[in-house]
Amino acid sequence: MTETITIAPVRKRIRVAASQAHAFDVFTRGISGWWPRNHNLGSTPLKTVTIEPHEGGLWYHEGEDGTRIRNGRVKLWDPPNRFVVSWDINHHWKADETVGSEVEVAFVPDGPSATIVNLEHRNFEILGAGGGESMRRDVDRGWPGILELYRQEVERS
Image (cartoon, rainbow, N blue to C red; front, side, top):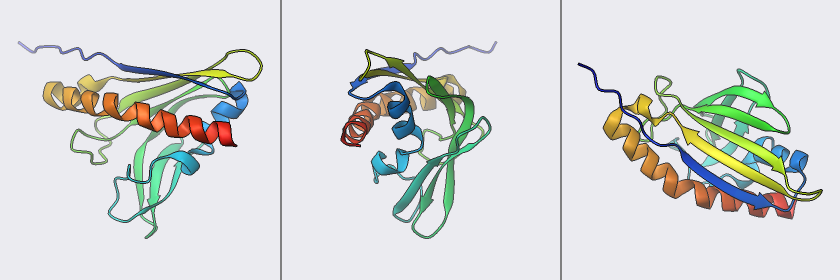
């Protein structure tokens, strides 16, 4: 008998002092400007982070040596409302196209000059019980700091 596991999604929310369109643009097109440089799967320092702006596009990191490492693929692209990307990273923090959990980021206007950004990282079950729980714990701790870097960039630009 196969046991089905369920692992709760990680949900984070942050309010930014920016319009919905600007908040979406900085999160996606401007990700290279705020993504933490130490969050890199490559063996050389991080040069750029890219989310290609269309369904089927890649989300990847490029190292200073020109090596590209795929973090995921764009599954839904709905500017300026939301996007969904796969998170093709295993619980050992290695790129792995066979284990795509998902990250959805939604941008909800909160008046004319503010936006609520809702992030949900889900589908950890694909990593198995041990790997899924490990990844969930790691990203639950990591997303708040990443979102704070994003907030600082979106409000500065």
